[in-house]
Length: 330
Image (cartoon, rainbow, N blue to C red; front, side):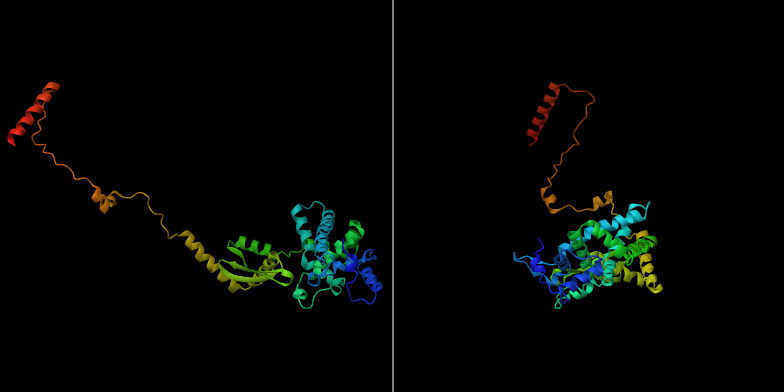
């Protein structure tokens, strides 16, 4: 499954295999059974190797597995540690412990950064998440080599009791985006996170660029290997900018102009009913003039209204008499 015969040939900075086992023992507190799993956990995708089947091998699959195992372990720990706390608090506590910044630091503290194999010709060395990703891959390797209980003991005995304070992390406010959104809501200002660009780095890993605008005023910029990371970076920079009274004054000045326009709208809704005088003023179109029938003038002066109601015979006789008089006149 893991092509151990190929992984075994990976050259790590140790003269003998015995030294590698000893180094892992110092990190883990136990010796690996399947050393190839741990070697693969240290193989960054910039140094991927090709299997006999033509597939590229690196630590990404182990990283995926380790990420899921870490979520379960830390979720278990915070659930038992903070009895009575609601789901929202537990979720935030877990996310702070397993966030990349924390895992990157842990990886360096245990010396894992010295073992990661990556290409010096790529930008992998500048990837802030490389160490944290390798740590997750290491958890994945432990899980496949020994099982869940070993992963739990390693995290509790080696990491959470010495390198990470669960209590401090749970109550630590590190979500800069959340703090900025809260500030904007309290002050009723318009806040917008704009994704400016997304470019591919080494191995097609995307880099995101975020710009924050408050009341259409450009604020902090941020970059990151995920959209969330770039937003956090931009939010942190914006919060630093908001410490300057002059910058805050500029934002509230823009807000005052916006609210003034909203309170005094310049646009008047047009009336749908056309006044009668306007209808009279409207000229007739040429088509209407052409199609309009010429009225026939009738001379009604000789029409006599009889007070007596005439019978049918009398009406016919009167019509014949009138017709005879017109013939004589013509």
